[in-house]
Image 1: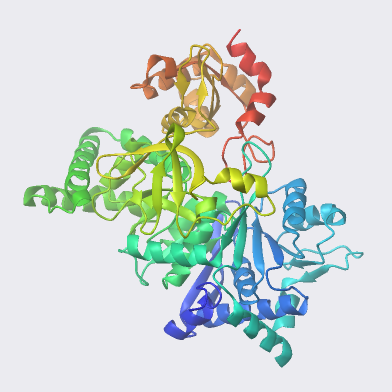
Image 2: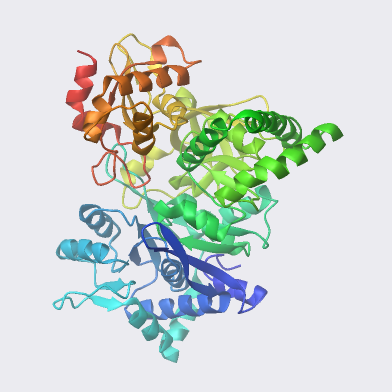
Length: 607
């Protein structure tokens, strides 16, 4: 059987017909709005992917040759990827927010010969580094309003590129068909570059067999999904989580709505109203603080009703539905009443009133938040995975999931723990190694072939996997106490006044933190308390504001051991950012960078 991805779009067209919608596209409008852009039927999608395949062949892209895609989420990105698969080429996605230096690094490391860009900023970044990228021969520009430099002999518009492929002669079409038929499971499907939190990014080699296996495993585990579902794609398609999820959705006949601007996901949700969507914990943390704030502001009978509704929802959905047990009739009747009067309105306001399931992974998500959303009828499916494992290693099963875990291991994977309780994974979705990195590849695997995840964990009595810490993040105070910073950061992330946290304390006497407040919420608090300030710097230095944040931190740390608690903190007047170097493209904290950039502030907390 051919690789799933190689002929996926044509096969889906044969199953569902030309006219079934495959992709819809949401684009920004005005300051905060969104509207639908183009949509593609399966017939359109197959024709565009075939044209991309022929055009790549006409540009002399050979089997297993790398091409790069440096663009935000858009239909053209998927058409180019599936066109590459048909030509046996290897699409390598670069985060749309990457700097010119990051683009240079990946293009050179992968040896990409063609790069797709969308907006003018991405085109300019490529032009800045093109002289340092000898493998690069062509730049394909997706957005029609980008004007290439007059001296640029590499550039071609995406529309001209596709038209060139549509006009391809029989010889090129026969070549593409032959290459597609010769595709093997061991062909490289893509390189996923790691986030580089502690060093240079490495390209994880994921073969077609990795994606074939991942799609099959998810069909077994996510058994409530069908081709009647719809998905919103808002995480970057350069991220393995969104990429693998979107491929799975397409393979399952699920219509995918692509959101171009991740900053407008709330508006996109209300427009698309999907039944499923993968996301990261920060999305749910923000939604939780917004909803609980509104519930907390209710007065009188409405407040009493909301509290009662949550208690009923907790009991019905976590004590009964979670375990596949029918709730007592009186509890079910109460739940249906509150679902109609309270929960359905909350879900509708979020844009997920028709929700089926919502996978989330990438960082810890507190049990408080997971339980809250399950109580109001939003089925968050917590999971765990890595770029090197084609995303999912484990996730909640439909029935019997344990809150506080990351679910049970997917079928056909072998997972155990090794030295320092490190989670080790073996199976058909595990990468073949790091591209052109023999030493790092050897270090990433045990002698018996298990991939070293770098995460520590354990299995509970029900066989569910519990993450305990990221081994590389784990640090020890000067008193010899081990601290897992992500657990503290996740807990503080529940608070509506806290946007970002970096916990400090390696070889220090006690734990401190650099905290970025949620500025809009903090401004509202300042206005309510008549706190005067002239700038954000003035606001975060205000003694009353600092006392207010300190009180919230103390409450949030309830249950932590004394040595784990934050003793001092610094409020910063600006967010950590990718551009500033504090965050990776997957929004993970770069701890060494933060320790270096804010050394003076850190030392002051230990003075």
